[in-house]
Amino acid sequence: MGLTVERSHGREVEESRYQRGVRHLCDAGIERIPRKYVFPVSERPDLGTERSDVCYGSSRTLKLPVIDFAQLQGSNRSQVLERLANACEEYGFFQLVNHGIPSEVTEEMGRVGRRFFELPYEERCKYMNPDMRSPVRYGTSFNQNNDQIFCWRDFLKLSCHPLPQHLPSWPSNPPDLREIAANYSLKTKFLYLKLLEVIRESLGVKETAPKSAEDHESNQMARDLENGSQIIMVNCYPACPEPNLTLGLPPHSDYGMLTLLLQDESVRGLQIHHGGRWVTLEQIPNSFVVNVGDHLEIFSNGRFKSVLHRVLVNPSLTRISIASLHTLSFDSTVRPLPKLIDEANPRCYKDTDFASFLHHISSVGHKGKNFLDTRKLT
Ligand SMILES: O=C(O)CCC(=O)C(=O)O
Image (cartoon, rainbow, N blue to C red; front, side):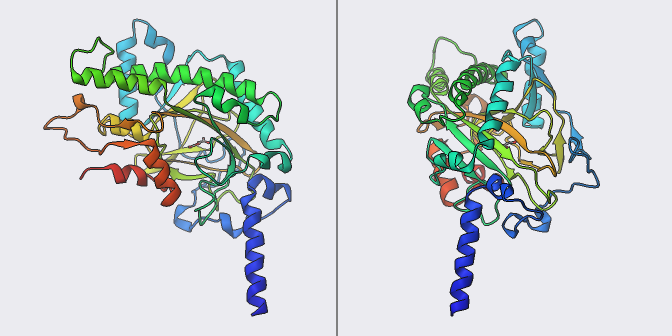
């Protein structure tokens, strides 16, 4: 009896250690990863024999289609629109260059994100909060309340809309984090809205004076998108002594319309599921990796794909990435665009909203594309 109580107390102590995050675990110094982080053999990454730090996981790499944002404003617009639509259909991802956000803004954001994770645990943990709905959260794994196996990631979540409401609750340390992240959020929101305009055009939607109920609905949606949700996730994947046994993030799709991802230029790690296998994305300096989320897959009635992706960890380098996730406001509804529904292309998805996604992940968890699957009409 005494032994059982002691064991269960030991497990609780271990569990509370993991709840403090990977960075905290690594600060204590470890040579092997605890069992809590070991994925089943079938879910582990195949890292081959590659051992160099920067090229880690590079045995199968992929160059994403490149979209030159500046060219969308010029005479090549229709060709770029076509390339964009093809990328969203075939890969669910593309790489955006010449996007107009100065490199100082993106570099500062990456640096301040890194500095946040270098703060002492006592400072970071002020923002620890197990409630997934909380607008500001420092946390670990994917969903630390539900995950049986923890992934090798800590994160800082910053809700950005409306900014004046949320800004005062963002971390006050590092002292310049609020200013840098606020500037970054405004610039990425502007870029997202521009991109979405282009994406809607590539799906055949034009902003016109409303002539029909359908036009009204479409214009209402444009307004909803402007007032929509933006969440910045600063992801930190500490160097891992056994990267072949775990993942920084397990396979998942993003819930929203679009995600603009700023990758760590010196450490690869993002893999997408393409052509039936996992491939590591090659990086292009000064670019964003942009991906289609579940809401855009629904809106496009399945034409654009919200593709599974996951993250590898590195044996000796800490990787930082900044994901800016955009979608409708919390209570707006997304549904397939009526223009894209006909006899040959019947409606594929039920109406959905952000609130039901949050309810789904906090109760069932988020594995693969399981949320999108619940929205499918068979
Ligand atoms: O770190 C990355 O490269 C990807 C991050 C990601 O997939 C996410 O935040 O959902």
